[in-house]
Each structure stands twice: as C-alpha cells, then as structure tokens.
Image (tube, rainbow, N blue to C red; front, side):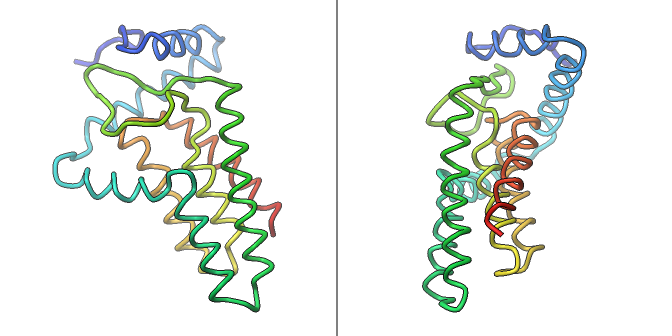
Length: 190
C-alpha cells in the first residue's frame, strides 16, 4: 500500500516544499503528484543491492560537471583542429553548472525525502531544482555534438540524469527541467 502524498517527511524543508507544490494550483499539483508517483515507481522497482555501487560511481563522475569538463579539456588537447569549438563547449558546460547553482539557490526546492525510500547517496546541498547533473550533461551533449557522436553523448547524458532519480536525490521534474535548460545553454555554444 502506498503512503499518502502528503505523508510526513523526515526533512521539514522537504515536507514544506512538497506541501507548497501540492497547494500551488492545479497544474503544479498535477506535476507534484506525477513527480512523487514516478519517483516512487522508479525507486521501488529498481534493484539496489548489486547495481547501486555502479550507478553511484557513474553518477559521481557528473558531480560539479567533472566528466564533461574533463571531456572538453581532453578534446582541446587531442583535437587541435577543433580547439576553439571544444573551448566554447567546455566554457558553456562550466557556465551551465554555475547558472544551475544560482537557480537552485533562488528557487530553493528541497530534495525528495521519504522515510520509506531514503536517498542512496549524500549531496552537498538539499536543493534539487533543476538538477545540475542533468543541466551540465545536456549542455555538454548539445555543445559537443558534432565533435563526438551525438547518440553516445545524449545516451550518456540521459543515463546521468536518470541516475539521480534512481539514487533518490531528484524528482523527475528536476531532471526534465535540467535537461531543457542544459540543451538551451548548449545550443548557444554551437
């Protein structure tokens, strides 16, 4: 049996954040309920014991956009004929990460916090909207496309973003917003 959506959460900030989303009108309420339902579905149906360490490790490479910044720096060194494009892409990824951090501090949506589905990792802040992993990953996929195979970039970006719901630190709308923001910012570098 699934607990009610407004079940007390262990983090008072997360509880207030979800209550605010549920009371913010019909559209926000529909999104919030869909977020919680999809979050619970992913978290409850995901095998954790044997794949969690792999997903934790992979997701860790996306912290502070590290994977994507390292990829851009490597591209500048290994592909001198496209050094300018790699530099623009790398700068865009860094700026996307910084813009995301600024937006999080303004919007202040709290991370999911459900007693029956605790997060599998610790995070540096309790702010979740939009997802920095999704923003930097999709900014990189868009900015580096053409320099590397686009399908591989977008597949990696998608897995990076989805890993955050699996690990219990983002709602699906956090990663959707981050993906849209990252794609828009990555387009500016092209």
